[in-house]
Length: 369
Image (cartoon, rainbow, N blue to C red; front, top):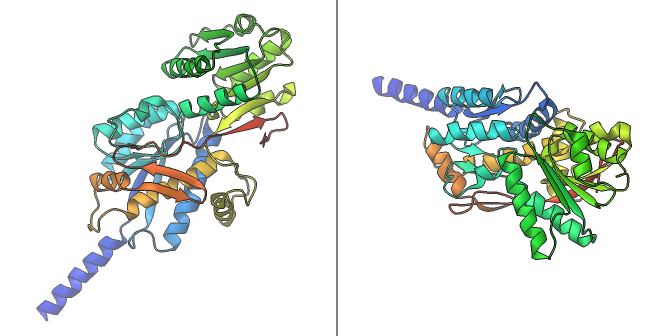
C-alpha cells in the first residue's frame, strides 16, 4: 500500500509540475506616447502564443506571457525586467522601443537571462559578445542601407540628412555617409541637433529645401512631421522624405498637410493575404483572437513569438528548464524559415532577420507599397 501511495504521490507531483506554465516576461508601453505600438505588439504575440497553448503548449506546459507597463520610460522598463526575473521568468521577450530595450537588455545580461526579440534595430544590441541577446527584426543599419539603395535607384544626388544628435543617429549618419561615398556621393547638407534645443525653422533653412532633392530623417514621428511642414513652407513642396520604422505612425501627424513620407519596414506588408504565407497565418490568428486591425507592430509580435517558441521547443526535457537552457536552445536554432520570412540564430550570429521593405506613409492614414 505504501508503495502504491508513494507512486501515486510522485505521479501527482510530476503531473502538477508539468502543468506549471512557462513564464516569459515582457515590458511594453501600454500607456504613454508609444502605447499603440506596445499594445499591438502584445496582441500579435498573444495571438500566436494562444494558438500554441490551445494545442497543448510546449511539452505539455502552457506559455504565460506576463506583460508589465513601462509607459515608454526606460527606468520603469529596467525595474520591470528585474521584477520579472525575480518572479521566475525563463526569459525576457518583446521589449518595445529603443530606450526600454537597451535598459532591459542590461538587466537581462547582468542576470544571464535571455533577452529575445526586442522591437528595436539599435546597434548596441547587435555587438559581438552579447551572448544573451537574440534579435528578430533587421537593424537600423539595414533600414538605412535600404534607403541609400533606393535613393541611388531613383537617381537622387542632392541628399540631405536631419537627426537628433544622439549615439544611434551618429551611427546612422556615418553608415549612410559611407554608403553614399561608395558611389561617389556625399550628403548635400546635414543637420544634427541637440535634443531639447531644436529650432526647426533654422534646421529647415540649413537643409536648403529649394535645392535639395531628398531628406532623410532620424527623429520622433511628431518632430519629423513638424520639420516637413516647415520645409514645405520654405519652398520644399517637391521634396521626397525618408525615415525608418522607429519613427512610428508618422503619417498620422502628416494628415493635415497632405504630405507623404517613405518609411522603411522590417516586416512583410501585413494587409494583403497571399504575398507571404506567414501573413496569411497571422491574419487568421488575429481574426480568431477577435482583433480586426492588422499592422506592422502586431505582425512583429506574432513573428517574434514564433521565434521564442522555437527556442522553447529546443530546450532539453528537464522538468524545470533554466534561463541558461533557453539561451543555449536559442543559439541552436540556425536558419528558421517562417512562411517566407527567414531568421538566422546561432552561436556566431544572433541578429535574426535582415528583411527590409520600403513603403509610402500617405496622408490618408495608410501605408502603400
